[in-house]
Picture (spheres, rainbow, N blue to C red):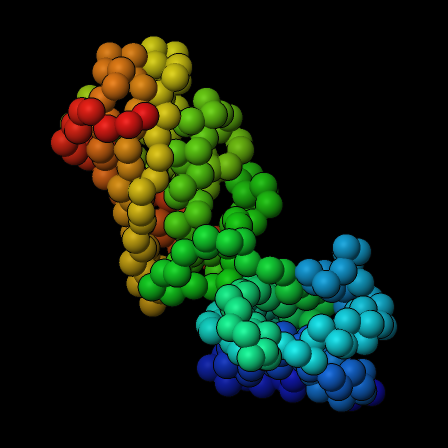
Length: 312
C-alpha cells in the first residue's frame, strides 16, 4: 500500500507545513464522514503503528481498524453532523524527521432546530518512514472544553503538554490559546499554594532567564527561585487570599518566536484588607526556544485601583 505524503527537500524541510496541515484536516473531517476505506485517503496516511484517541470512544490508543469500527457504529450520529476546520498549525522538526499538527474543528447538528455548535481539538503526530514517506503515528480528536477562549492565533491545544520542564519540554506549537491557559495556571497555583518548581506552571519558565517584578517589590527583578519564596511568604501571611481572572488577551509574533499574555485579575480576602477587592494587571512574556519549546521569560504584576464594597 503506497500511502503518506511524498518526501521533498523544498525549503530544506522534509515536507511542507501546508501539506501536513491539509492532510491532518482531511483526517479530522473524515471522522465525521461516511467513507472508511483504509486503502484511500485520508485513512492511508496512518502508519503501521498508528494509534488514535477520540471523544466518541472511552478507549484510548485505538488501532486504525478499531477506530474505523467505532466510527461505523456511530454513523447515525455522524451523518447528522457537519464539520469544518476553524484553524490549524504545524511545526516540522527536520532533525527528527517528525512533525506535529494541531487544529480546531467546529461541528453543527443538521436540524431544523438551532443548536449550539461544538468545537473539537485535533492533534496528529507525523513521522517520516524509512521509505521517505510521511505517515501519522498518533492522532487524537477530543471535544474542546467549554469556555475555552479564542485568541489571536490558536493551535488547537487547550491544555498544556503533560509534565513540561526537565527532560519533558512544552511542545513547540504551544502558542495562542495554550499560552493563555499556561499563564492562567500561574494564578491557580498561587491560589492552591503549590510552589513545586519542578511542576507546572513553574516548569514552564526559563529558569536561567526568567525575571519577575510585583508589588511590593516592583523595582526588584526577582529570579524564579526568589519569586517562589516571596509568594510562599505572601500566602502564609494571607492564607485566605484568592485571585480570579476576569479576562485575558494574547499577542503572538510567531515569526520571531515571541508572545505576550495580559490578564486582568481581582484579589480578595487578603489579611490586611478583608472586604476589599484589589485589581491587578499581569503580563507574562514568552519566548520560543531553539528546540521549539515556549518558555516564560518575564512576569510583571501591576496593581490597579482598590474597589471597596463589592460582594465577596
